[in-house]
Length: 105
Image 1: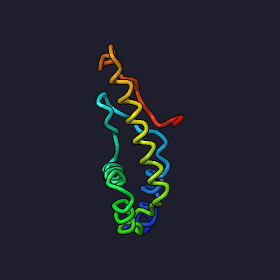
Image 2: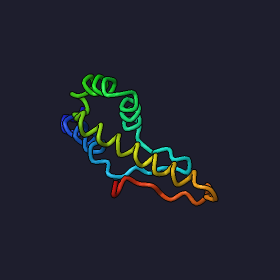
Image 3: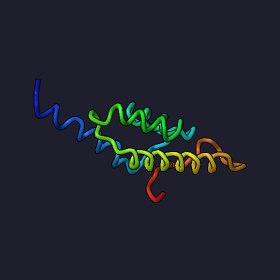
Image 4: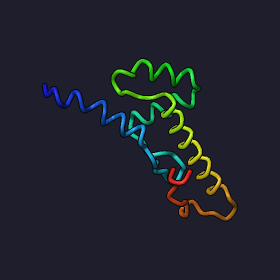
């Protein structure tokens, strides 16, 4: 097994989650995420205790920070809310949903 790969993999995964500056949302305002991001978001939605437990179990593997992850999840939630607000306006066709991202939130 390649020792360099074992040392680099957690750093790459940590960077991918903590530096997630934008999340693409589909036409139904569902974020397009990796499996890990999806699990982190799910746990953040369950509450701070669930997120803390999930991260503490995997802290050595992914080197995640609870505060950064909670902030990221809040940004995803805000982007989803903004997207849903746009799609629920009267006269807005589903085909005209803007590409919602977290940039600027």
